[in-house]
Length: 198
Image 1 (cartoon, rainbow, N blue to C red):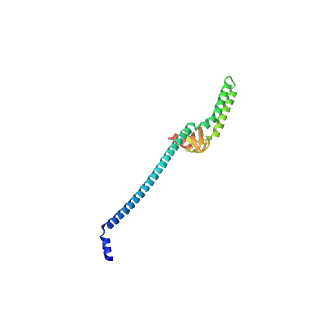
Image 2: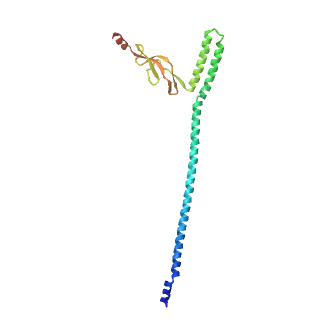
Image 3: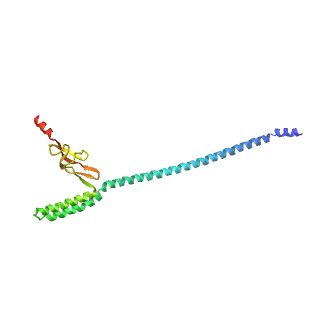
């Protein structure tokens, strides 16, 4: 009888169908949970990408604004960079104007010279404070970095390559040459005698 029950169990077709259905249901549940998990991960990744994209757009906009500000500051620096210098020079112009008025009716040349010297001295002091220095050249050895030789004169009084005369004043701004000194440079006197003989 025990065996018959077993056979009956095996022969019952509904039980097998139920177990197959259960298996399918559990597979469906597994698939659904996997799909849900994948969907939630997808949503997380999309949100993360959107967040990164927004940060990138903000950063790009900030950088663009920074670049525009820098360009504006550079333009202002170029346009108004000489402002402080000119503010220092304006009083010198005032002195020139006063000197001009004071000598209009004067006939004494010494008063004119004094006024002129006051103006030149004031201008020199202002330029010196700004950093403009006169390059002293006469009697020094020729240096192509700060001197421009426009003449060469044979001389017995000066050693070769020595500057005999300054033809145009040169200036430096701090340690940078603004304009080299135009100079006359001494050469050996023998070269002159040799050329004369030939």
